[in-house]
Length: 341
Image (cartoon, rainbow, N blue to C red; front, side):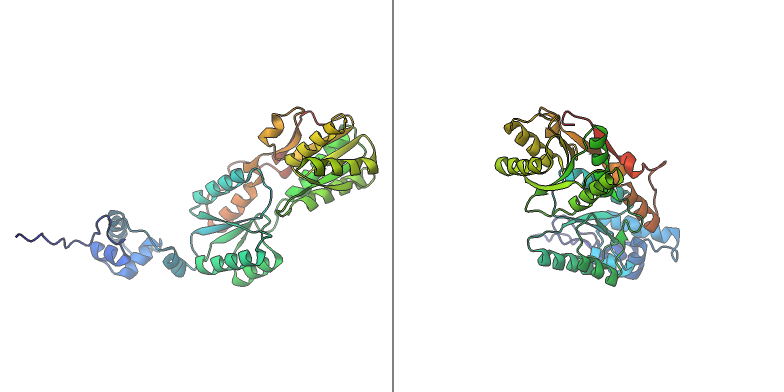
C-alpha cells in the first residue's frame, strides 16, 4: 500500500484551519512581526520587495487579519459603531445604507447598535462592552446615546461623530412645517406627537421649533396632542384638539403615520381636509402619496442630510469629502405638497 505524499507547503487547504500570520511569515520568509507591520500598513521600515512578498503571501493563503489583533496594534479597529435610537424612523434602511457607503469608502466597516427603552440598561452595557472589545475608530450617534453613555464614551476616549457643529435638523423640520402651514393661511397651529412603545428622540425639538415660530409670528402658542396610530385613539386626539382650537387648525405631525391617522380621523368626524384640518407629515412615506388625499410632507434628501457625518469622518481619518458644496440643512429638506394643506 503506497503512502500519500506529504504536502510540506505552508498553505492551508480548503476545509482546514484558517491561515495564520505564522503561515504568512513562513511563506514570505519573514518574521511574524514583519507580517503584522506590513498588513497594518506600517511599511516605512521595509523594502518594496518585502512588502510585496508579504502581501502576496497573505493573498495566496487567503489570510484574514484578526480584528482584535489589529485593534491591539493600531489602538483601534476598523469598525465605526452607528448608534440608532429605538425610534420610528420609516426611512431607516436609507439612513444605514448612506452612512455605510460613506464609511466603507473611507476604509471602515459599520456596526449598527440599536438602543431601546426595553432593557435599556442592558443595551447600554452591551454598547460599552462593544466599545471596550472592538475598540471602534468612532461612534456615530443618531440620538441613541444616553447621558451616561456619552460620559463613558468621553472617558474611554472613543471619537464621537459628527462632533461639534452638528446641524439642528429637527429644529429645521419643525420650523419648516410651521412656516408652511402659516403660509397656507392657518393661524391656529398644533404639534402632534406619536404615541408608540418606541422612543421619540426627535419630536420635542420639532415641537419646540413650532412654538418658536408661533412666538416669532405673533401667533398663539401651539397646542400639543399625542396621537396613537389607531382608529379610536386618533379620533379622540383630534376631537380634543378641535375643542381647544376650533377650526380651521393646522397640525405639524411627527411623521406621515401620524398625519394619515389624523386625516382618516377627520373623515370619520365629517370634517374637510384641508379646509377644517390641515396636516403636514415628515419622511415622505410611499403610502402617504398613494392615499386620497395625498399627504403633504417634509421630504428629506438623505445623502445631503447625512453629509456632515462623512465630512467629519474624512476630516478625522483622511479621505475624500463630498465633492462640491454640501447642501445646507434647509436645502436638504423640502415640502412635498400634497392635498392635506
